[in-house]
Length: 187
Image (cartoon, rainbow, N blue to C red; front, side, top):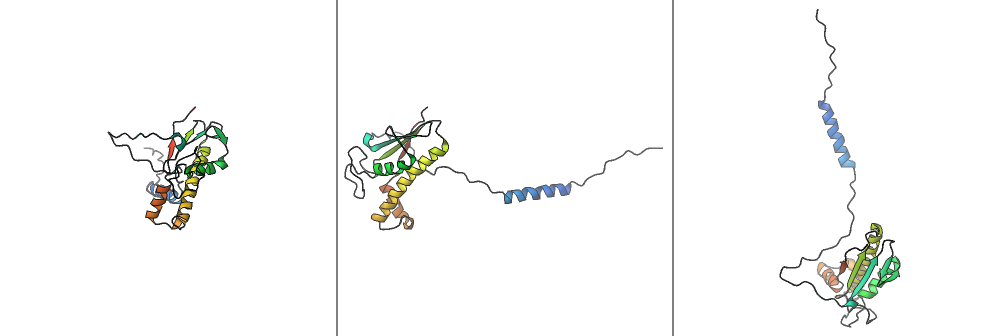
C-alpha cells in the first residue's frame, strides 16, 4: 500500500499582487513629498569664447561680507548683527556716490558705491558656517534688494511692486540688478 505524502495547502498568490499594488498606489497618492528648498538665483550667461569677460571693479563698489565658522558676520572686517545686514546692504547699494543715479536716495558717501549698477556684494563664507545661518544671510540680502526695488516702483513708477507689468518689472530689476559674488570658501 502506498502512503500519501503530506502536501502543503496552496495559497492563491494572484490576489496578493493585487493587494500589494493597491497598497503601493495608496501610499503614493496619500504621501506628501517635501519640496526642495534652496536659493532661487538666475546664473549669469557664460562668457563667450575669445571675449575678455573680466572687468576691473573699483574697490569702493564692492561690499565685502564674510561669514566665519562661529556664524558671525563681518562687513569690511567689522562684526555686524544679522538684523543690521539688510540696512547696511541697502545703504551701500543706494549710495549714489558718483551722483549719476537719478532715483537713488543715498548719502553720496565717497567711500561707498557709485550707483546700484556698479555695486557688487561679495559674500564669502567659512566651510564650517552653518547652512541655516548662510540662508538667513542670503534672505537679508535678498530683502535689501526687494525693498529697494519696491521703493523704486513706488516712487518712480507710482505703482505697487506687486501690480507691475513684465516690462515694468524688468525696468525695476535693471535699476537695482542683483549682483552677488560668492567667493571661494575659506577655512
